[in-house]
Amino acid sequence: MKSEATNNGSAENDDQISERSEIISTVHTDSRQSWLKGRINLWRESGLISDEQSESIINFETSPKAPIRLGARFSRLIVVLSTLGAILIGAGIISFVAANWQGIPAMAKLGFLIVGQTATYCVAYQFQFVRGYPRVGGAIMFAGAAWFGANVFLVAQSYHLSTGNPDLLIWWFIGVLPLAYIARSKAITVMAVGIFVVGISWKAASQTDDAVSGLLVTAILLFTGAAIYSVGLAHMQRASTKFFTAPYLAGGALLMIIVTYMFTFDGLVNDTAQNSELKNFEVSSGYIAIAGVVSAIAIVSLLLANWKSIRFEKRLSVKLGEPAIITLTIIAGWFIAIHMFESAAPYIVLFNLLLVSQIFGIITLGVINKREAFVNIGIVFFVIDISTRYIELTNGMLGTSVAFIIGGLLLLGVGYGMERTRRRLLRQFGMMEVTQ
Amino acid sequence: MSSKLKRLFILVIVIQIVFLLGLVGYRETILAFGRTAVLQTVPVDPRDLFKGDYVTLRYEISTLGSTPVNQDSAKFLLLGDIITGDTVYVALSNIDDDEFSLDVQTGEPSARTDLFIKGQVTSINSDVITVDYGVEQYFIPEGSGLEIEQAVDLEVRVKINRSGTAAIDALIVDGEDWAP
Image 1: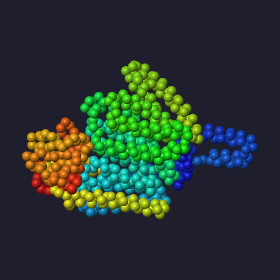
Image 2: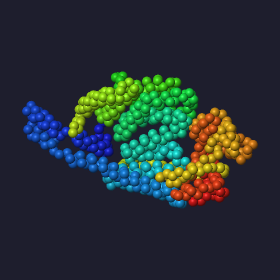
Image 3: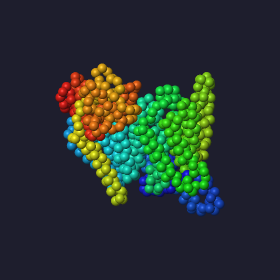
Image 4: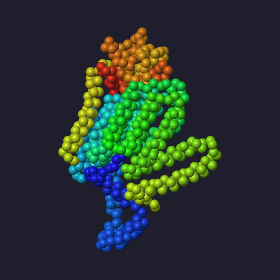
């Protein structure tokens, strides 16, 4: 498994400052200070530190941290406001142009689109890299990337090309992904990943029959989640790309778990399995090609990310745990795509087991890599899964009132256990939970 | 930003511009050099906040089957197995001749086929398949949709390149090229 280094460029330092201030903001000040004072007195009495040093430490730790906290929050506010401002201006311009599209001469349209897009990038560059306003510049850069997407659609519109075409989204994705890396923008990375997910699932839907498109598109989302997560893992291997890891890992993990959860219900698969006409539905070669490409991206990225641990890691669980869950997810997706089983039951058993593996896998990874977000995602889906299975189990078996009472007690028990577990995990991370 | 990154940044912007110009160039090439076909159509007039007004066009060749869809429609012949998502090529050479069927096939037609249009099968119900040709939307200035909706006879002149890709050249309303 991976551990993360610190200090990778100024952008990462910014993030670390934000994270540190977040940690500071969650500290329960009074209890922490009294605990610290007690420890420092003990160290002083034991001769580990001098009186002068103990006084300096206490002064340092008890000095108000408000300016740092305020700085970090203020930075986020700047990013949010700037991004919203840039997007609103862009949306206004695009809406105006689109509404009067046929009234504007062809060359003027094209010129306006290209000059507007280029000017946005130039302004963003000036703010972000020359004048020292990285947050405002980053927000304008994000707007530039959005403008490029709008331009793709507006050019398509000017030639009456159907705008309900998933290829337009895929072109947009290809155009903005390199920009995310060059501008070191997590926001544009998130935008690119989002466009990819929508574009590829839309493309897959266009390759399937309406009656089974829900089922097959959901399977594509499973491959896509695995691919995004694996690409994130591959990013962790290099110091230069580690900065971009989080959007891929969080997005991929969420997508995989949500889609797997959807397949744990018998409805999605059962409708297809019970319909004899649909039981033998044909899958177009176009769909198979899309699923194959996305699966290949996942497998290649997984191999790149785990090459070292596969060769040198001795502990089998560390070596194969994460790749095994991702591979199993891809295989489960293919079972759906090629409709491996004739009844719904094997799918439901498979996806329930897969969901449990994913949930415990992500919590374990969160603990090992000290990723609070992973622990939170895992715990949330654990509770959702437990609640769902409880409702399924008690549905029709118990009276409504009894089911509510037992369910309530169960949730309180799970909540108590979660709180204890979460605090213990956060202590391991060197953090303290907010208690007020 | 290092000079190398700066060069890459400029390169990405240039690639984006070249891509947009390429898209324009491709469509202009079809309009300039493509062969002409006139397709009968029926409009629907939806509205979209960001796209402006547009009419959705449904053609006679949008729904194809091995038997006539209705008494007035031409007879279409599906060659081979066709499933949803397939790319199909519809021969247009004999579209106005009732004696002939329209060939619809997944493989690219032979050189003997005079004119064909490329589409994608979006659904299959019994013997009838629905095909999109990428020319189902016509964008118009805001508020001018009523004129088109009230037209007695509506046709679309499309240009088609050698690989069967079509682009809308003009909307023909009651025998006249429509201008906003």
